Length: 125
Image (cartoon, rainbow, N blue to C red; front, side, top):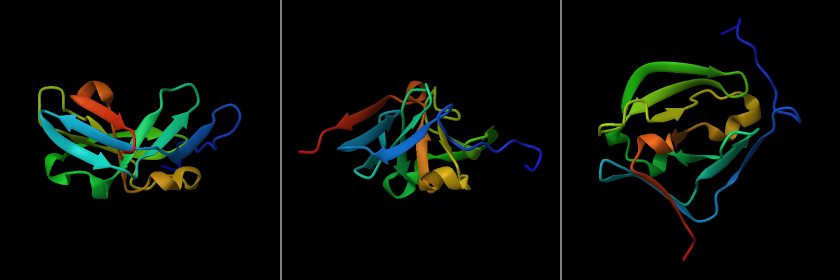
């Protein structure tokens, strides 16, 4: 990884990580994959917000590791997982060793909205 650039978030590429109010539930292939009140919202530059859910609040038995790896110069190397169902291939990603600027997302998982049945954000009751 030494030949890959490492960039710091800043005014040209801001990254904001903050707690998500309420509860986030992820459903795939009819099953609840994740259910959390400790989700983080990552707002990055002009990209859509992404919900990062703690591994502890995810049914890890539904995730199958895949060989896919991608690299983000702001976050590090991402690992991927597939979920059951027709669209579940590489539906989940994680940064096992995120760069220090985004260290909060370690031990969290993110889900592609178009590869799961639903991502619901429910207000606190």
